[in-house]
Amino acid sequence: MAHTLTIDLKNTKPVELVDFTNSLNGLADEYKRFSALRDPEFHEDIRLYIERIETGSIIAKVIEMMPYAMPFIGNANTIVEFCENLKSAIEWLKGSSNIQPDIERHTLENISKVIEPVAKDGGAVLTIGNIESHANVNITINNIEANAVQNQARRLLNEMRKPITGYHSNMVVYWYQARNDPNSQRGDRAVIEALWPNPVKTVFATESVKARMLFGTENPFSSAFVVDVQVQSIKDRPVLYTITNFVDILEDIHPAHPQLIE
Image (tube, rainbow, N blue to C red; front, side):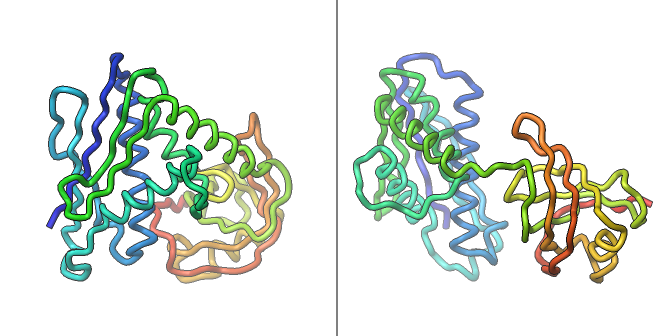
């Protein structure tokens, strides 16, 4: 059974394609994050797909599909719960609710993307909801509210922002690319999601630290590692990780597609 999510943008100005695309991408990413917390075992099988786009205002019908998870989850309506969760976050950000939700940095970034087309159009109204469900939950936001939400999200993001440059202890890192040589200081790249979502050039303070991350587990590319790291950055973007100390191994948790270079 698929549940429909409707995104209805009543615009008074032409909507830039990149803004509308980013809005849908933000909604899809937040939905995936929500479903991962709700059903960790099956969230990779849960997707949002555009069913149709209607004329008038911009109306996108999006359906939830769980092809492999459905036999295990049954008729659980993830869309309804997602709408409820998203609505509580937006209501709090725009000051309509005193109940502060547990909200993370990625959620703030995604909400800002979702409402960007409304924030740029003084007469626009965005409605998101599961209007075809018996448990109807609608989120409606106008231009003034969208700007208020974005301003609050920006303020909170600035407060959450961690200094990247410098020494960080007990960070979780996983391989993106590695040379099969503890002595090599070229070609190694790793990801520390708490600092930066993309791979960064990585070197090691000693050969033994790299050896433990490369040969200390049966499959280093299905493992993550707890390390101490020194970070160098340019314009708030990390450009070099120096792993100074190995702390622990977290095995069988990393689904990446890394490369081992001879």
